[in-house]
Image 1 (cartoon, rainbow, N blue to C red):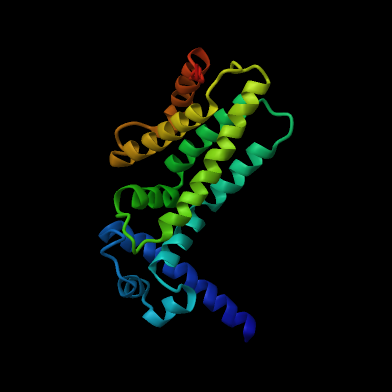
Image 2 (image 1 turned 90 degrees about the vertical axis):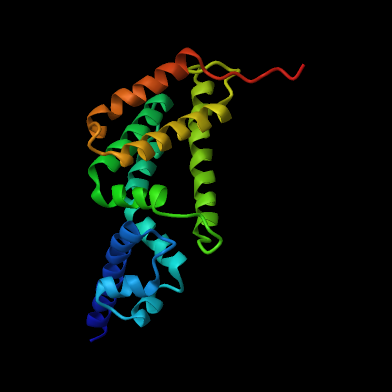
Length: 212
């Protein structure tokens, strides 16, 4: 009986996340209520509060579920010993773009974050996202710093600026592609787009300015 209860709770949890993806995408996050999500899932508000304390927690769980497979593979790429750091950066970036192109759930959640979500005080989720973003950027800069150590990039490379540039490039590509996914095949062109950026980075890396 206990096992069955756990299975039912998991089914309810998944149904709520599925409903949240659908309703957030249709109505936008700010205009969506927990009642809307419960109704779309064929459940009561009580079912939502059993699993989530508020809309922010529901939104967070929806994002975590969508991005967990991506995070796992990126961690695997980064942690592979002895790998050329530039290859690591290339693989990470290409993988991100191809995942968005091929994974319906990730594509929908990215679209919700970029185009269906207002950053209001109600959505304290964004404070948590800032922490995750900072961690991601730190890891990316560490890869660039390793490129400097291995003389792939010159010693005077401003790795902080390089990190900000590639992050903005990736986010911009995803943001704009989601506005018109029929405009071009993101999966097909992912490698070429990353090659373009990295070629520019190698040819003209941003350099630290002298303080004198």
